[in-house]
Image (cartoon, rainbow, N blue to C red; front, side, top):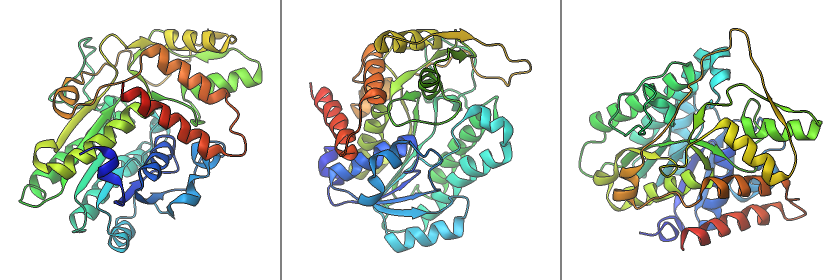
Length: 354
């Protein structure tokens, strides 16, 4: 089942649609002809993709906190979604050190609330939960973590996502392991970049803020290796995974890595240098913070399972990822901003078809 066929006219509930990944996904779902219900807190980025694109005017736009399980179940009951895509999260490592309890409340218990809402909503046929590459116990391996590797997490963000993964597996075995149950999958993606991200304390938005201020970018860990990927890559995977769950919920339930191709993992230094090269300007300098919170030095994913069983593969090289991101940050949106974001999705789809 192609994603166009899977989502046309389908009732889809998307959490986190006011965020970076959620905003892109809301636009994509609207392009596919889905009936989208967005559930999220107000946007915390006044110039992020949700606000810039105006996508809120095209969907059912609901302000709700996923930490309120009772209200969430009422929302599910009212809208009777067929597909649920759960992206709402507290997604910043350093913020998780400042607000660890709130991070667990959102990322772990928020996911539990979504699972419970799905369990009590008979219309749901498929649930995809976006987690992270950071859910693995980081042992520094270079070959890439596979879905069967141990979960863990040094910082509260990573640990909260690992705990969410354990909850997903528990609910799948305990409550969804019966004939006719919806398919339940988690998707573990890498470090996503792309236009429309204005979050604080993220390397690419920080890079463009430094350029706008005429200052060098301060880089905390230039030698840290990250699985960089354009935001549309994992979103394509989420859509493919949801379509597969609709087709065969038993076979495609479980955890899935959606990371860059082998050999496409690069240091922060590489990414910043490539971005400045594409822009033709920019400088950076290393910064040393006393008592800085721990962040992993090496993160790699093995996405063989998704390639072999789901047919998902990353389409963009590292250079193409950086080039497209630079273009998206520097292209004026004009008086048809939603059309501009749609055109980038169309281009990605064209790339994916060749």
